[in-house]
Amino acid sequence: MERSGQAVSANLVDVLIRAARCRLVVLPTDRTPVAEHADAIAEFLLRHHDENRAFRQVIQLADDLAHEHGAERVALAVAPPPPTRDIRFDALIEGVTEFRLREEKLPLPKWLKGTSTKLADTWFVDRYTIGDHNVIAATPEQLLRRNIVLDQSELLSI
Image 1 (cartoon, helix red, strand yellow):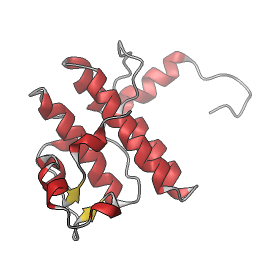
Image 2 (spheres, rainbow, N blue to C red):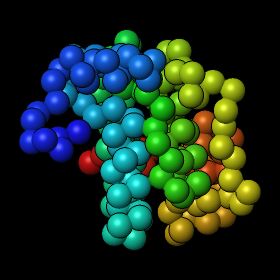
Image 3 (cartoon, rainbow, N blue to C red):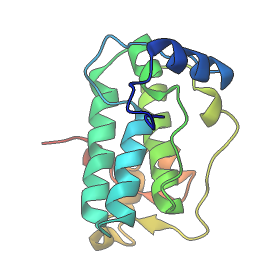
Image 4 (tube, rainbow, N blue to C red):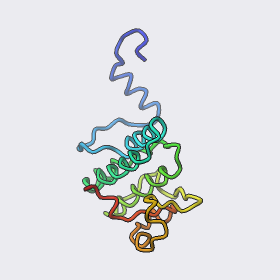
């Protein structure tokens, strides 16, 4: 868009966004939206092959949603996250987002309604807890439904 060295005008950006049947809005928060977290997770997975940093980004996603309430929490989740190209993390993003929204009995965005990525095999996110019935019992239903096992306490940052 900057072929001629000229900056793109706000008007052009608005026209392009509207043509895509979207709107650009400013949220009254400094928290990161779910879609941006998904981009960062994909970056850690694809470019750096770093699942630990990708998981830490999921924890930050959970924190960002937990720190907002009501409409602001929903607004952070309204834009669909792009695929990370790792179905486990796609399902984890879905589950964490749904968990945080259901926690306050908030409406789910369209991208979460009626869809649920279910992993073929159960994923114990913390490999040291494989088969641990206490961890399974402490896993939010929104993750279990997707065949993900992760103690709810892991979704809190320290």
